[in-house]
Figure 1 (cartoon, rainbow, N blue to C red):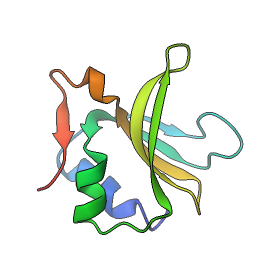
Figure 2: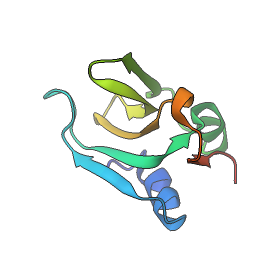
Figure 3: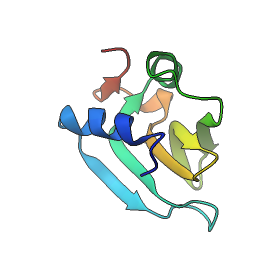
Figure 4: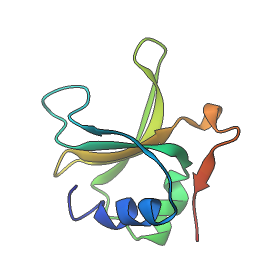
Length: 97
């Protein structure tokens, strides 16, 4: 995981949230993507961690490939992904701590 998203990865792991996938997702333009069993309140996380503009809010709403939402580092092509906001019932929410 790149240095830009590593602190968020560590925070999520410290909360005991399960990692559901790690690796190259999607295409060759993805380096390391980590999926977690939670919803990421992206805007709150970006503010709290003062993430730079090249960390972008990623949303996938394609019913064929799956619904997901998270943060992508456009410099390193790494990402931390959680559930899409419509699928948060019963899931942990990562926000301001």
